[in-house]
Image 1 (tube, rainbow, N blue to C red):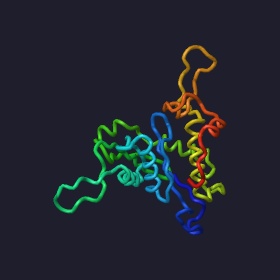
Image 2 (cartoon, rainbow, N blue to C red):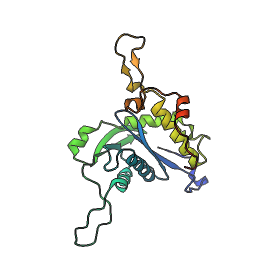
Image 3 (cartoon, rainbow, N blue to C red):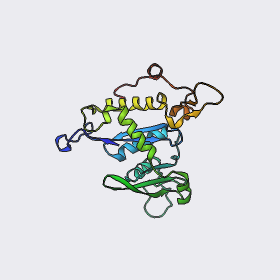
Image 4 (cartoon, rainbow, N blue to C red):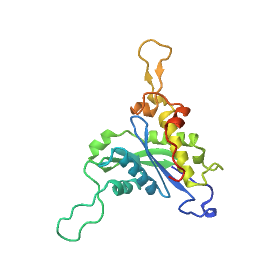
Length: 235
């Protein structure tokens, strides 16, 4: 997802200002936001998110991935997880990274007409097509929905307003706070469980962190700000 603060010709792009892309990795089963990246291009944002994912439990191989068909995520995936093949002793030694065995990656390419999505096409990037197609769903609806949630949560992502970020470190801090509230504080209707036995409530609300087994209760904002360390603005 992206946000711009006006006509690009009026605001020259610099490493710290201008238009930035944000990549969010979402676990399809629990809706937990597991990684995030910011960058001047979609590839830079995706690479930062993949590096975060690599530190958080997937150090060797990436998990199965489904994305839209913009095309920059496969390159970022190879850059972070790919390996340079071993030299066989003949010819010039290889220098480019290659994808690993067992990767599963599906792109869903959207066809639009008049601003509406009229058709989607599945394209297997890595992995055996029958296995990859059977693993994933039909669309990227969960990711699109979390983008809408982000724009409602975070005024810095609302297009064509004066709420855009003027400072990249503050934007990173706002994105981190938004993800923490989303994962720990906000229950999702699709994650609720039917209460067992007789009681006042029929449904038990759950947050993505509860569904993922990270916590056993819905956090309050007070608990969040008094439990988690506040990162430095310059970190």
